[in-house]
Image (cartoon, rainbow, N blue to C red):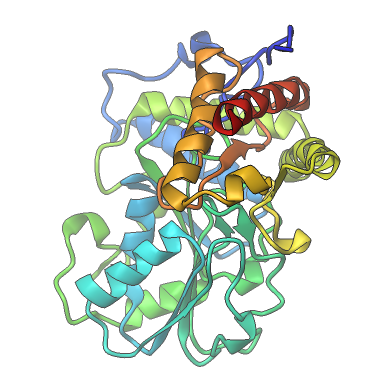
Length: 385
């Protein structure tokens, strides 16, 4: 039967993600709207966002944190265009975003010395094959596959190359080993549920050294330039953004950071996300029609939880029919206003994707589960009729 109780908040999108519990638009009433971001009040807000980011994430002394344009995509491409080419690079991909960075490097930058280490959705590449003499570009968490790297043990402490990590659905939800990461990027619209369009780039001293001692052979757009006269533009990392940011979005980010501090900082954020994953894991174990897309339990994402349908009636269909059936489940839940935006990513295998980051309440996930079973039963009955 159709469940009676719906999630109090049915927002389970993997980006932009749900706002923090208790959020209202009134939280942003002190945003310095109509003021220049170069004015004292604007720069102070941007500097506060940078400082709180570093504090919550535990970024080491000597690392630089900057707010940049173009969401996580802009931050990653800023790193690729500015830093690559000094040595060979290993490109890792096991889902669509990692594959996109391979396209950038091979077809846009057209680098000569590129190795691609890839895996199908659900798996990781062989991380032991990463060469510490080369740069490496990878996502920490595959947002569209629900597969994360379990730790940074595979990254050499004696590496000569730089590690460039797209951490957009991992920052604030997973324990990132900063001593192993030279460039880390994310967008606050993911784990903290902030408003979109802004990215964050975090540079280690090794990355700064590369920037100051290497100039790529291709021209750099102004929006990517982090150096001037062979020196890092330090102002970028103290609040003087390259382009004009939205002070409303910055105020929203500050609100999320302050909430994160109140619930215990990074440890509190990770715990909430892990608790949310536990709700979904128990349900997966109890149901024989669904499994995690990740094949290794150690790599199951605690933010973008991707699910595959394994019932024979579903797996015996061709991929187009599977995609249609999975979409019907998501559409049915959307229509009932029980869950919004939980269809699998368009390039991923047919299934469902449920955000379990810290801004989602475990009680809402628990209320969602009977609806998942109900919607699955409705679609199954249709296809078996």
